[in-house]
Image (cartoon, rainbow, N blue to C red; front, side):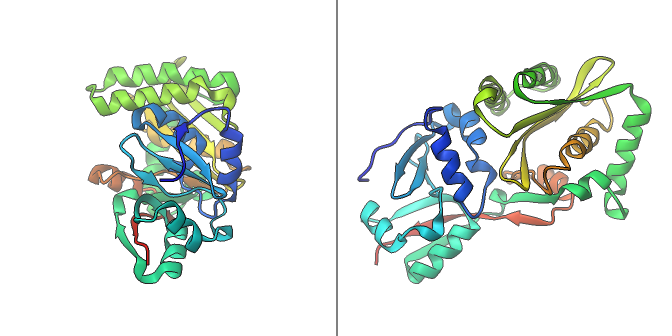
Length: 291
């Protein structure tokens, strides 16, 4: 590979965000907040070449390039950078279609439903109208009636408050390596809250202590992504409450919410589908071969 990678850094964050803003499809996985939070777990590195940013993991898994896909001369760039071909992981659907049209028989695509990101209408999840959302609405109403609560919007240094909620949530869990990695990612994100524009959070207190929280990031002017959302199981309806209250407080700024993927977990898939997505951001594994 004729270019070198370096560790993801705050020094080049603005350069990356500029390229991300030019990307036609904005996957939650590629937001700077997500990359920063998980950078140590996955060993993320990046390289800025040919007008885009290339991202890879410590095991040399190359992700899709980030930037203005339609402005790049891919028929020149890919053979020059990858003369023997290359496999790209987590390729957003827009880039996958573009490369299939350009290279036709030169690409193969492996679809993976577990990678799809769930896209929802903010208005629908705030209003919870109709039979589709009757159970969500019922859980929310029960929470409001049962518990003395207070919702707080968090920005800037106030985001550190979510760590208390995270600690309480972890105490309810059977700790596993996956949960420990997620806990580390949450702490990384909160630690650099001042360097990640568009980072927002909300916390739901019951009797003065955290019962649930959400940490989110603006992907563009219309869409926000929920990176982390936790609720204590002792409070029935807390998940429905934090979801609705957080979105209600950002509804004037965003029309769509990305609730990320289900990772192939059937229980998580059922839970995510119960919020009735209006669309998906599909990602695939794409293999490119030189002609």
